[in-house]
Length: 408
Image 1 (cartoon, rainbow, N blue to C red):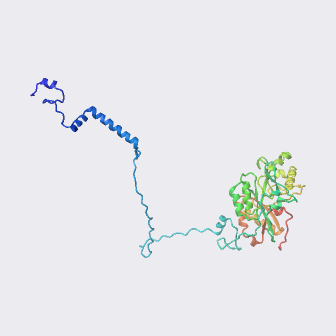
Image 2 (image 1 turned 180 degrees about the vertical axis):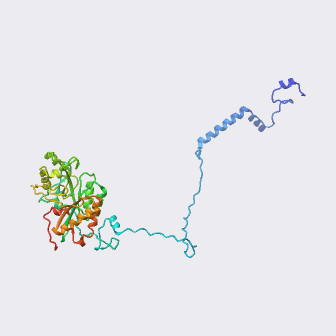
């Protein structure tokens, strides 16, 4: 070492042995020299940060601190579909057989559409068919409710006998179309509960078939109105006590032999107010009540309101009616689906047809199941060709049925 050790230890750091560095010459050089000092540099940096923050507050950040990208969207015309190549120019390919769409038979088309199809006797369903469209002058039902035949009851609007003894039985009935020959009246009961069966009966059965509705469905008024719009006259079913009650229960508003007269009258009033436009009532069960004296005031009230009563034929024949009030009454002679099988229903329809040819008129009843509706619809297709006329069930109530001879 060339310097003494004590000089190195006692000399201030950064001071050259040759002596202090002379200050830079000139004003600019002096300013730069001052700025390099630690205190001055820190002050300048702080001032710069404050200045930048002031500019942001004054002018804001146009980008909002979020990254953005701009992309141009160009609209292009859709590509043209490729033109088919001529068969002659196409290369040979394997032949693929495509089956044609399966064609439905006339019977299936009829079932789906609900129209009435008439075929010549002996022809198959797949041959030519004739669709029978109701003529413009086809009978139409009177609107319901008719103000002349309605009054406010304790449970709603009820039918009543109009001035001049105008009856709902006459006003709401489907007019009997003119014609000659054997007549069959069909009453289908138990509707208004199952929607599919009710819709099928309304759409598929001939308009002359009468429909009876149970009183318990919340949609019964609408279903009965649709049936009337389709041309069917309608009946209202009256739940009554059967012989095996309570094992068989017709419902919460059923008329019972054990009830007093006012209680049964109130239940009858509830049933009568379920919907408008019916021509009469039909028993729903009721074998025991109909054989009891408790039924006399019920039948009298039905007649006093301008209605009729139909016995569907399901109760025992021992349930005779005194009918002192002479309320219009009729009993079905044949129950088509007493044995619920297609072949049994077809056999009963054939029996009804034979009985109509013998006696001129027959009243039959049937439940409203899909199977029963289907068998009746099939049977009724070519009745005109067989010389049989369908008439509404009210024909059995509005006077004695006209009898015809076999020659007719």
